[in-house]
Length: 217
Image (cartoon, rainbow, N blue to C red; front, side, top):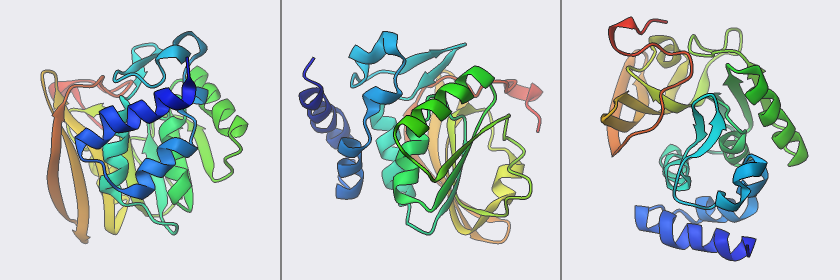
């Protein structure tokens, strides 16, 4: 596989057509090597328009979904970022490139270890991968400018909304198959939030979250 040609094709054929046109985001997709965050068995599919299995029902999101979230979040160098669902560490690496610091929670120890190894190998110093659920927020870490939930949830956890500073943005996929909506939620004032629906999709649910009325924090 010609890796650089495959990366170029991913950006031009999958990501641009999804109206991801921010030059900073597109450049970042060239810089952060997606193939280095993919399990070895799926390396040849690193740039495919698909979710890549990570085991235990968890996946790396399709490249266009990750890129769309990055564009809509508009991350800046002073932003503190919280991610729920580290997976392979790839999204954390993308977030970290434009942020001051990223804390990423992963409930499965084996995946948390995989993400840490990938982040360290990539030489990224401003990401902490924590083993744990994270849905109740990051106690003692203060408020965040950006929160990303890298899997679907039936409803946005109130605890995470409370940890969003005024002006902060939260990206999430809400709902249950076959009806899920990617949303960008902005905290416009204390306890006041504006929600914009970005696109419809279907992705796996967040590990450990009980669907429907069984969902609790």
